[in-house]
Length: 343
Image (cartoon, rainbow, N blue to C red; front, side, top):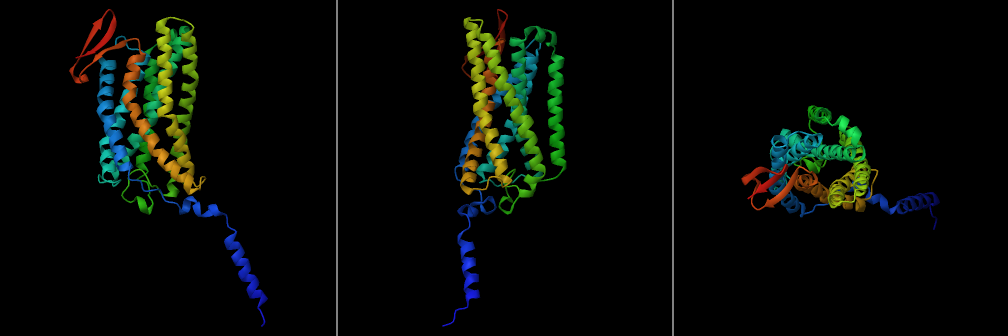
């Protein structure tokens, strides 16, 4: 029996190539899809509802008190007001997102509403950490460089910084909106601000993501990580009970900032790399997908903590009692110290 050697050699070569491909090739992002997880339809509404119930009254109270009850106004009070405003803008988008997740991630309010609420939601997350950075630098200058701080302790400087930050944010948001809606993949036809097509990650989303990660996350985080420990070290040398309490407050603020913001920024970087196919493994992609949801919840819960932390951290205020709702509050003065009494 004659065997066609050329025919046999061709098929053996094809079989060899087929079976020597790396096993990870079938786990590339191009062939992956985001896991369908039921928990997000309940997890996010619960977290967002908690943030609304606790965070919205707290931030409104903060905005009211630091706007109308603090005299004289200081750079610290200016930054606190802007931080509260950024948190309020985030919280105002949450009812739409609660409905979106309860509706199993199907958006029903139209593309313009999706774009506006989405850009407000994400932009003000970066605004929050930027104003936290401003508060951190203000406290650092007051404790480590007090003489310089006294010369520069004018609200005009803090107003200029705040207006500049908001101006950059507004311009970035308007440009984003004017460029039109983002293209989604086939599975994201009813989604809002997720499931974007790969070409969007390579163009507009890529540019905004890189700028946000550098100037809205990496730079503020580094400044906070450097300035707060230096301020705490300087205060700890005083040795009084008041100074020790101030040190504990500083480290508490630092810990909560790191808990709420740093994981989100790290996971978002990994999420960004995955969307660019730099991270190709499906198994890693699934871990990033779940981690992204947890870290987003932590960021939103930070809006609940900001008012209480900064009321406690400033020498202007003491929480005397918290029995009912802030809406029934009365504001009084006691021995030159503002006392927020809620009864």
